[in-house]
Length: 415
Image (cartoon, rainbow, N blue to C red; front, side, top):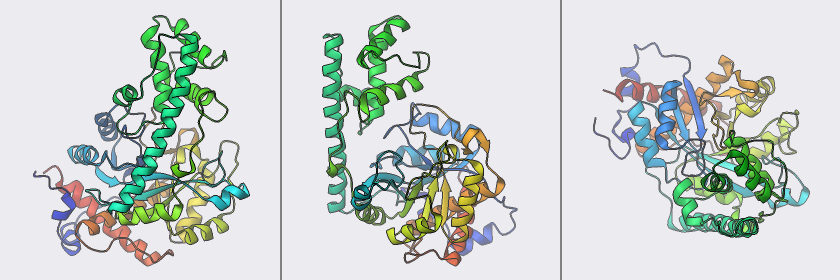
């Protein structure tokens, strides 16, 4: 098989694809994960190859890359998906700031920071493109995030020096060893853990060193639980109140309107990531009233939402999905894999509860909308646009088209 820059460009017309598959008995849904982070931002995966081998083992048929601020992983992601017969969704994620909500103390989809909003773009064009002035704005935001991380590292090194003057962490070395182009807090936490591993032979010595960095605080996790330990390091040293914490510059955050402009310019669909309920059944102020949230999302300019069901109660998730799906929203699910813990790629609700067939079907249909959007954009046609409000007929047509496009992909990709 000869791989073009985007195989969807070579696909037959909508009518031809439907004709080819007209006699096929197509399944109601397949396993899909529309939101994972890769090592190009931060990920539980050690490398890209691990992602595709696990996805193949678990029967994931549609997979969506969703890194923070970058599309650098798109090429590797595309090649890996093609090799395993997995349909790739090209997504991206941003962190923005709604200053009016910040002033009013309204939390959106960050449970700890009023006004802060996570926002995704779904189904961006592949190969990735962005107009020059927007590319420059995005680069500026990335630079600001790296400035913050460099300042945090300076503080970390001053703490390390007091414990052992011979030890020092280097930003470029951390990037080379643990990250790609973008260093994040979790990379620093990993670097701290590995500093102990590299310099002390015994686990007791290693943990004592890390505890000394944390001001002598006794840590719950030991060296045998690296993911949990890195979370504690991050919480104690790098988050607000920690000795190495550096507050973000406001220039590190884009206005949601600018984020949506970037997403649309790159060919994508603006998508709001829903936090929903926490383990105590609490909601943010923005999300606790579904009707108000619906109106706010329309005003914001999106009719697409995504959820990470692993953090939600299954029954609450079901009620929420029913509310928004019936009102015409496109809905996708994912797992993130944006922490050190390695979890299955198969999407489940809180407590590892299996999703109902209805939820799986809604998630599958949402992924199909994005697949259809990518197909039409690759063919030079109009993608998924609703004029700012949900339109059931348009969404349903895209669900059907995406189903045909993905099934054609599965039928022909390995031939």
